[in-house]
Length: 278
Ligand SMILES: [Zn+2]
Image (cartoon, rainbow, N blue to C red; front, side, top):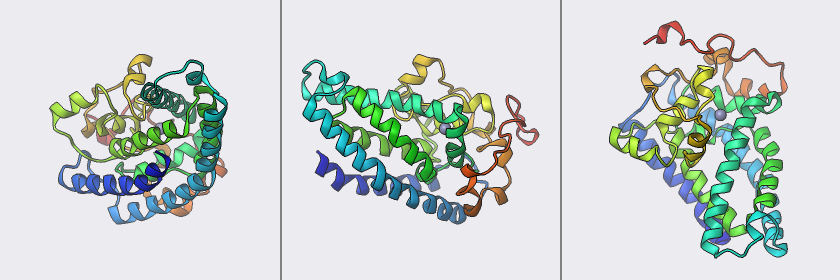
């Protein structure tokens, strides 16, 4: 599974990105604010550094700890001997749930928000936003990922299965693809859709504080944080204090977590900006 995953994850991400980019052109969900070429260049630059951080920090640590789990029967899922298929399904579900918790923490703990902010101040939302995470956020999340693996008891093959589920899911729900209404309603009962995640990227704090799931929507549903009834035409993407394109250039967003922070949400906690009143 590990070799299979190594072999397949890059083509899967690139293939999914290509298909989504094609669909984004054909069936856009939201109107774009910035030029696509400039945004994509910026997002790919952030993504390149992020990918290096993943390869150098998260992957080796995850590999080491998941092997330890397998060898020493460490963690919740190793307490009882489960059939392999059931252990894998439970591991993917529990990784998904604990990623939900991590996502909430990245918004609620000011030190973590400094880094997650870089992802949220993209003025548009498409598949390239899915790759745009500050390397600092990814490096810090290695500690959380380690705890996830050790507490849940995630074996190397379960970890690979979770990544194979997570990567296409994250690309999909960040994409700017309008799904047929019926399909959207059927899908969002189970998995996060572009419509749901668009609400999480809204400029309104009330809306950002919803739809935290990264894979299955059941976690938002259980926590009462699922919001599906906001039309995308009403949503302004971003964070209120960073609506000026000059403030979200590559040179500005990379050092952002290490600088004095602005009061992000003061302007529009529950009220839409005037130009977007329904
Ligand atoms: Zn977020």
